[in-house]
Image 1 (cartoon, rainbow, N blue to C red):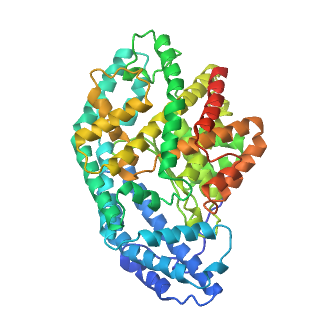
Image 2 (image 1 turned 135 degrees about the vertical axis):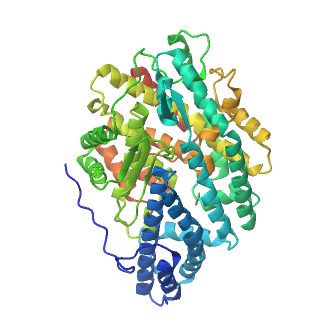
Image 3 (image 1 turned 60 degrees about the horizontal axis):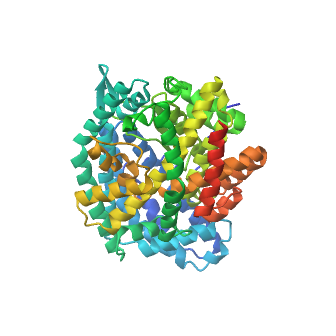
Length: 571
């Protein structure tokens, strides 16, 4: 049980004292890489190493700018620093990146680089060459800057309740109140506040869709969906595979969620469920509150990770010591949570908005799973090997949620609370899968039908809610809130098409958990072996290393859901 001694690796190409204040600070090193002769295998390997170092340093600098901006969206200096990178540095890098990719692809010694992961990296390089267009550089800068408006708009949202101002994250805790009138009042206040920003968010998405469509057209694609699939490097599955995922979820999950919601309706003795009835604990007890502040949250997770494997607890101790954590919700903070990999130092940063809820505990465990991944892959040779596809990254985090659940008694010492926590988590697991499918299918529709009106957008979203929903919750009087509920999903604005990965990884995580329950040591070793690969193997190969399948057929989904349903029944 210790803090790990982590030092930034000694730089071999860039000056140790380099500070990235402007493009001019880094430009000479890009010129060096561009002008260098790759006249031997040794020269190529040195060039790859130096390029990797530059990638790590610049990525980490950009990471800190984003982190500081998201911690306080009202900090004008932090916002300016991020915007300076997006507008003044990143656009200068893009042409060099394309030139480097072409230089690498044309090198006669390329086939002599046979280390594990090289083929995965080189296929991404070749795809980047195919997609690069000079005219998209400025568009990317505009999109990156504009998409951050979502965080500023959402971060400024709050409501008044009981004489106090509450962030949306804090306000959501009242939806677990045993007082139904209070739940309804808070739900109404949340929706009223969100409605104030409806037009701003509609206009923002419309602008982003138009710019993204232009990016796709510049790269000779009919629509941004098809472009983005290539840009995301989805080499291992297709658009049709996503549609198959949608079909499997639509067929297998709503009946299970209907059963859960009907039991909820009966337990609450209600004629119909309203949207403010979906979070309250059915035990009649107050909402689970496993910690009171960020310090208690991190200590609880350290204790939990120590039980799973002491090395995992050490990772969190190190992050705490290095101040790579910002966990508590506060005014002006961007919503959501993330683990930001910092490739040069190799110690990530965890950002979240905790308010003391059970969901916050799960979020911290989830981000802790990402952190484990960062630590286990930090010594890979090239930065490119550490840059993970989301299908793999989310497998690490979602698997840790379920693995850790076997040891939640260190957090919930009361057996009744432990049971409540596990049941809540597993029922949420089931209910989130249809939401993931809804969000993904919506994004397909948005970009294939890019000239749609706001009204058509609302209809498309509502139709998808019907397709993947149960019809058990009555939204009478709140129809507008329902048809605009997509507006709370950060991914739609900031990282388009990054969401189905959560569903694919959730299926994988259930399979990892099933293995862990039957053979903990073997399953944990397979989990680690997969994470240590970073992105040096294909997604199916990484899943296979973890002892599971990369599979979202209806039969596979049905098999996994039968396991989850049995675990819920056992509680």
